[in-house]
Image 1: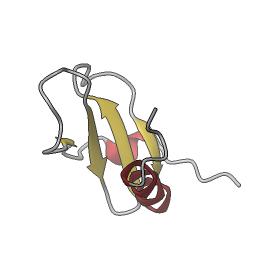
Image 2 (image 1 turned 180 degrees about the vertical axis):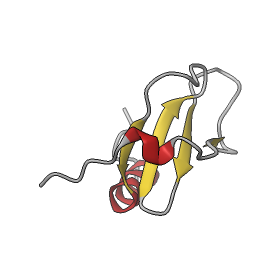
Image 3 (image 1 turned 120 degrees about the vertical axis):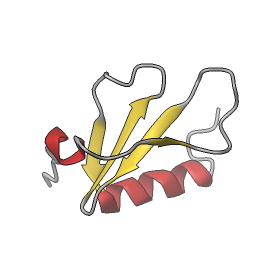
Image 4 (image 1 turned 180 degrees about the horizontal axis):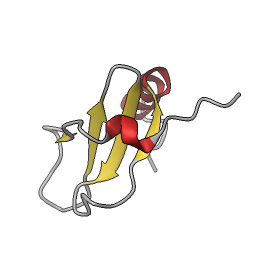
Length: 71
């Protein structure tokens, strides 16, 4: 299944940091467009964006909230 999202889809999106992020510098920002979702490093705003469909983005956020990636 190929659900690629062109990076240009997120070119004019406003990215935001979670209000739960601390001041330790280990933050990511998320941005959403109608059919796309992007994640980028908050310290390297000109770095590449991990782009995915909005559906996959919601699934990714839900997995984070459930602790799927906790160590």
